[in-house]
Amino acid sequence: MPSKRRLRWAAIPIAAASLVALAGCTPAELHGYLPGFTEDGTPATNQTEGIATLWTGSWIAALVVGIITWGLMLWAMIVYRRRKGQTGLPVQLRYNMPIEIFFTTVPLILIIGLFAFTAREQTKIEEPWAEPDVSITAIAKQWAWDFQYDGEQEDNSDAVWTMGIQAQVDDDGNVDEDQLPRLVLPVDKKVTIDLQSRDVIHSFWIIDFLYKKDMYIGHDNSWSFIPTREGTYQGKCAELCGEYHSAMLFEVDVVSESEYEAYLDELEAEGQTGDINDAYDRLQNLPGTEGTAAEEEGH
Image (cartoon, rainbow, N blue to C red; front, side, top):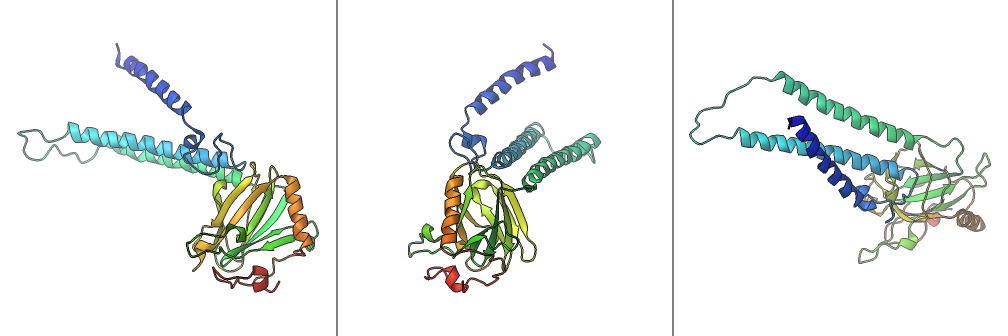
């Protein structure tokens, strides 16, 4: 049987075994054990699936390259090992043009491919909504978060907001989650979050959403997405921003539209209205202390 035919017949069971193995994978395994998915594979946002696919695809490509490279190294070590009775140096070659071309072009193709897939996915993520259903301003400060739900008036007089404090930790290191800043989002709605910093560089990261964006003073960023699954998610600052960086936590609640509207009405009833974007005061309360951000910042 010709060698090509033998290779073809050998590839069939390998491909079949690979398909069977992939079919038996759980959603967690198919998504590279990333957060952001339930047991049935439901993503947290409209972007989570694409990010996970890029992640797992990159690892598969790296693994294939690794297996080929390790195989070639092992083959060279076995085939060209020193045999019993051999002395001196092996035959010395100064260069091998086909191999050098191969080892230059193949990595270049892989890098260009990885860049192209990454750029394509990032372009989709960075595309802002022309008309978002919900506009929110997230303001980072040392070391907590303010969230403003923007209104329809030009001066944002109909906006509502919450001002947070950093994580309060007890003697055993447990975080009081009830005191964390809370961001509420409506499910299946186009959300745009404008990201601002009051002092140093911070980074807005909702872990299960598989994406984060830096926040700079004097240079605002934004992020547009659709939350697709109700639930509670953890958020944090992902940029080392000072002494209590680890306490810069927040909670994200994705709820129904009616619950979201009821939450905004609750904030309005509490008098937390208007535009707080110009309140560039640094939070002063330290972890473990009492008090609220509103008290500390004079609101």
